[in-house]
Length: 308
Length: 72
Image (cartoon, rainbow over all chains, first blue to last red; front, side):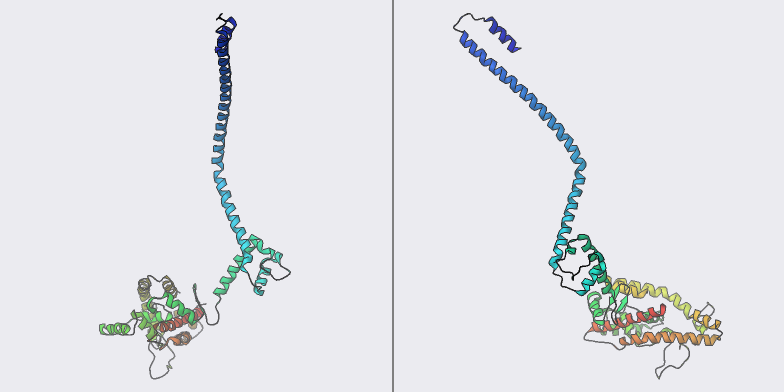
């Protein structure tokens, strides 16, 4: 609109005086140039605005897409890290400098028959660079190692999950896990039978037991009793053997006839044992829980022996 | 023990004979246990109580192995 008025003004040539014309024409030309430049700027601005709008739309779209694939990207990143770690492990295997061991060679032949090397397995063998192969070998190796550890050698003893290959092995376990060498709570059948046969005990005798137990350096009275039980062949429950020679009787000394053991399910030693059994059970459960409160290994073994 | 008495009586033994055979079985079992428990007899080391504990515990564990053999 401004340009149209200006063109009309120039067409009409309003100032007739020739003095003002050049100045006016110059001014008008400058104005025209300014207007043209402004028009160009405006057009450029509009184009830029359009581009900014389109860019904003693009960013919004990409943000939505990124939000959708973000968890997938994280998973991919984790997987890449794991793969890298596995690759490093497979690469690090030859660095172990495994000596040429015939057992390992047999082991390799046993595990991966397809990967049997013509020559003995060497650290730089190509088969070590396969992660899955190494994983399978490691699993089997661990399994074989556990089998070897569980194998009882010679006079070794396995009770539940406990394995003692020798007395020295047991000694080490004892020093590490049993507080104050408290062995009185580890029972066998003979000891349990002896504890079942508790008879009347005078207070003086009981105090003498306690005194002697303390004097001998035992923490509990169970140790002194277990040691005394070790002296006898049979549990006190079945009678006491004579001290003047070997026993020649045909029956157990305390049970001369079967009626003393069980008289038609009404009376007898068997019923007394069955009645006393829950009490001894409670007694030892309580003693074990108290004495081995901070020694779970000792507690587990003593309970294993109690309920075996 | 009661089942053993019944077993021997079913075999034709008298009540007392059945009981004697049962007692004989019990004696054998305890004799076998005594063989391994004997290492704990008279074991007392005043200077080293852990040795005593080890001996007694070893005898106890061996006793369990014998008992396990009978329970199979």
